[in-house]
Image (cartoon, rainbow, N blue to C red):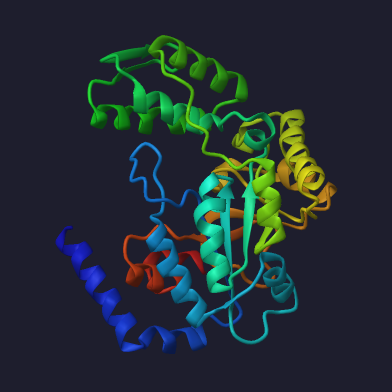
Length: 332
């Protein structure tokens, strides 16, 4: 850890232990909602499949439960619509639909007594096949060739070490995220065929597990069918991705789907076409991955969220309280 990071961490712990965060919260956070988001939560420590450690997640939720009013996302959105009276509200959301949401997260949330929302990509439970992003991660994790050429992307990729494979993954992933489905399928098929990697291990929820989550502390929202970035699809593909995910969750889990999360969730990853489809389907809200708080008057289909991916509780606490520079900018 560098000097700057060490100083930041020391200041964050000082704010947390002194009680200054509680004083700050009484004014700054009024009229704002905090929507947190996570993806994988487990202790595998696999650099190809990064995750929030289970103990860190539990520590964060226990901290939040002591200091905030945690409610289901739909309740938080009603509170915002009413003008956000009183203390701030907080919602916990988890994207994609990995099995650890059922095996690790559900027992902890039930123990603490905290609700959450799962934004589910429906292709894995429906087909039994992993998301394309997990197939790509699996290819680079298990590749044994020293180098591979990808003419479709104009790349020659080094694969001779774990470090090289991770670096190559970090180049290919963002390129494919901003590609149409046909190109993603072609590149993935070429990589899997040339490198001879086996199938990615099953890590996604099945429908029985999804239904169990919905019977307990989870509400369900949609997250597309195949986890493609919507702004890179044509109109018919956008409609298919959103309509299929909403329909399958309603049919398979019996859940009223009124919220949605954009895959990847940056400003360039969705557009008005997606918002129009959501409104037509009666999906009243959508969350992004753009950092910030949700406030009254904000477009309900472009709600901001805060990532739980912090290495230390003190850093997490200061960011949730809005005391880090990026959160200050995002709140203006």
